[in-house]
Amino acid sequence: MIREHDRVVLVIDASSEGLVAGDVGTVVHIYRDGEAYEVEFTTLEGKTAAVITVEAAQVRPVGRREITHAGELASR
Image 1 (tube, helix red, strand yellow):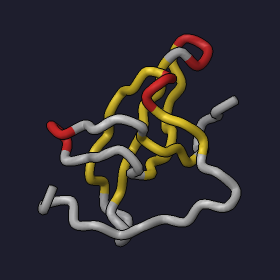
Image 2 (image 1 turned 90 degrees about the vertical axis):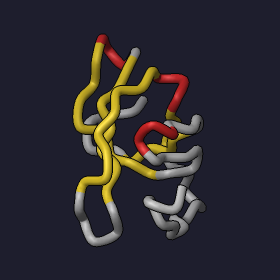
Image 3 (image 1 turned 180 degrees about the vertical axis):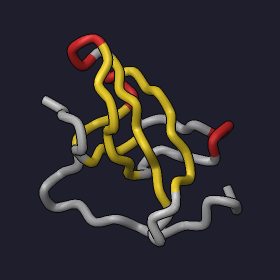
């Protein structure tokens, strides 16, 4: 189960926000017992890039053996 402050991986593109599948964010709010989440995506410097609401099927937990990958937000 995904909880507040868990890191999650976006599994869809959110092009209107400059986000792509694989981007990692932090859950800041849970709606309807986990049916949807408010997720904050930040730059590696810690500045908020986007806060979006996603359905549970649009994110997944971070895997134990996964690492982050850097990419330019503006270039997407």
